[in-house]
Amino acid sequence: MVSNRHESRRERRACLRTWHAVAAALLLAALNSSAIAVPLPAPSDARCRADAAKSAFQPKLPAARKALQETGGLTVVALGSSTTAGSGASAEDRSYPAVLEAELRRRLPGAEVRILNKGVGGQSAYDMLQRMQSDVLDEKPALLIWQTAINEAIRDIGEEKLAKILRKGIGEARSAGIDIVLMDLPWLPREGRYPHYDDYRAVLRKTAQEQAVPLFPRYAMMKGWWSSRQFTPEELVGMDGLHLVDAGYRCLALRLADGIVSGIGNVRIEAAGSRGRPAN
Image (tube, rainbow, N blue to C red; front, side, top):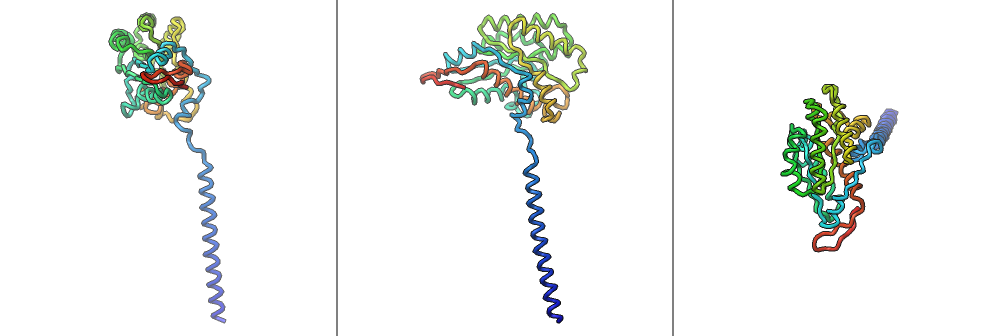
């Protein structure tokens, strides 16, 4: 009788161990299933296009198109201050001009694309106008992306003074047959620190409209990225509350690339010494 009781206990213990093993396996499967069901963060590039319809950028770029058709090359000058220079980026190749060059090369296969970074931190529009000849016209680009007015807004140098400088710079580039894109001011988490910020944004918009120059809607785009809640504050603007960081620069470059490729259109690139081929 004792032997039977021991055997019965051993059987019950064996059954319990089997049941525990099965339960553990089921629990692990359930946990794994739950983990798979948790939504993953959207890829960075997809997040960059949040609210894209509300901040469309579709410039007309006849000089850039002509350069690609006739030479197979596209030279772009990025003129600006700290945003162009890449202040806040973790490395030089994370600045918006560097990312833009890589994106345009990828999207325009067969084309020789050069983005010349002429950003100098802290400079005003007047400082940039003084180097328009050497840093822009002498480089003979097909496209100029002019990022400016942030330091004017911070220092409040005078709205009409800024408008005159912009008109003169646009006139010089246009006379040289260069396509021009002005870049709107950035959206800032604490822009209220600068009482005339919106006034200088209005100067940029008005000048762009009067001169028939496309305005890259950086302010609206950045505000859309923030409102989408797909970015943390630290991904867009650095600790100083003023300069972009890597994710913000990448998004800036991607949206610029979207507009530039759209503005060029479906062009047949005529590479030197080879037959032309269409680029999408």
